[in-house]
Image (cartoon, rainbow, N blue to C red; front, side):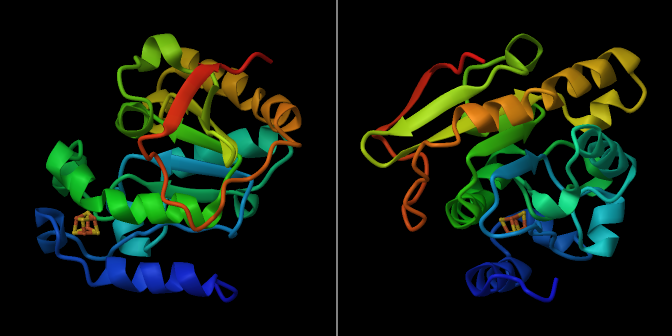
Length: 216
Ligand code: SF4
């Protein structure tokens, strides 16, 4: 991306040199994520797969195609949104990332969220949801936008949904995803006038609170 934000570029450089967890030894490339800075919408998935590892881009395989279709279905394109993962290196054999790996990679994602400063963070699947909304169940809580607030500083909304990869061969999950994508514009309208977070502030600090489900 030619017009990449300088702070994001610096962060991507750190990720490229990272050896903080064992995933560095099996990756071909690091896949930090991509998109505009700032962006109203940020998607956070699990980790790069084989195609992503080779092409150095998130969500370029079949799941990425479905993500793009779902965005097109609500009149948006992937160029408008920021897309990242909880781990920046491919877990071997596309296994789930382990909690120590997610923890090692967390500071990069935290800084990305601060830079992108999204109004709405869409958590793709259980691994992203666990990190931002611990204690929730994807089957029960998917599609329910949650307000997260730092008093006096701003509000951000997080919505967990199924991971597109899970929906590839399951028409019911695909339908559920389309229903949840249809909530994106109403959520953005609802929170349009809320202040953005201060972009330099780290996320998820102790005084940040998860509030009730955002009523649409
Ligand atoms: S997954 Fe994250 S913490 Fe682990 S080596 Fe890659 S960039 Fe570093």
